[in-house]
Length: 169
Image 1 (cartoon, rainbow, N blue to C red):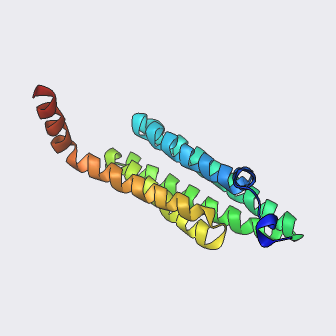
Image 2: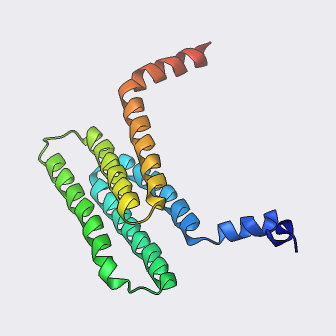
């Protein structure tokens, strides 16, 4: 048989790609990041709850993906689980401290969402480095979200002026 006969048809390759748990985990994390940012921005007094939920879900996804990898490699998972728990517990505590500092009015409520988003991006970057590479994509997405949100927050008056002028014309 030829080498071309051994390769999978394009439809089979796309079905195989969609069956990968990392693809679904990535899609869920990106969707959760967008929804979480919206909830945290709209209900600032409940921002801590939204970010806590996101951290717990991301940590669960991290544990799940690594357990699948350990199982397929025939390795024990629980010794590795402590790294995941320590990693995600660290951001959980950092976010709690951030929201306590916000309650004490040492940091603006407007800035807290961007700082939390940036912390989550950095945490996902390190998760990608040490735990699972899929988190690099999430880190990039969260970093871009933080930049865009900060840019729009800073330049909202300019954007609104432009929109007003366009709508008048």
